[in-house]
Amino acid sequence: MESGWWRVPLACCRPRVLLLHALFWGLVALRVFGAALLAEDKLAAVKAAVAPCWLLEDFVVTAECSECDAFQTKTRSACGQTGYVEKVNCTKSNRDEYKRSGRAATAITDIFSSRLVWSGLSCRSAVMEEHLFWKFEAAMLSVTALSAILVVLRQRRLDRLASEKVRRQIESI
Picture 1: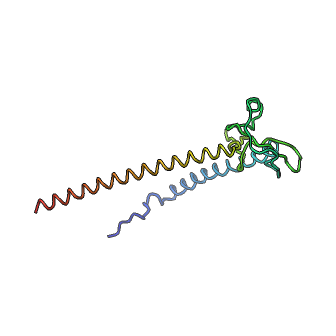
Picture 2: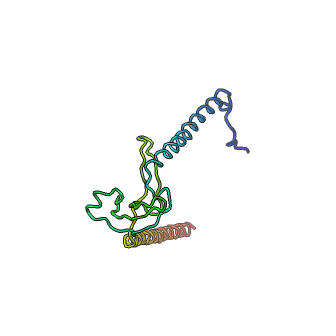
Picture 3: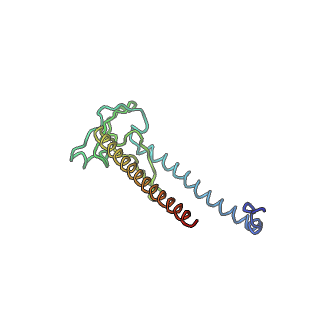
């Protein structure tokens, strides 16, 4: 017995349907890849004009990641979300700047407003990283313990159901 699940319905093979599918997927591909190409062009133009020097050239960290005070948080955008900032010196331009992102800083163009948005979190201190690490470890330990308890309870229930089934089968003999 052949199931035929792999067969294509004949209605899908008509030239008009095939043409409409090709047109639809062609427009989808044009929209997706066209938007990506336009975003790259805009990003390259804006990045050259607005990008901080530490994104474009090599730099040396002159002051390690430190906490911003209240005044710095209000006046420097680099203090960002976590309140920590790192001072860097760019080698080519010899400028001192405050680096807001850790090791992975990327620039993203907002599609709707065509403005450059820097992604990435502010640099973090070792104490903050250690605190977050132990929080994560505690959460994973809790999930592990909960999963183990649920497995044991489910196994007990299945064992009880199996023994009841065997008891019923023995009683019916």
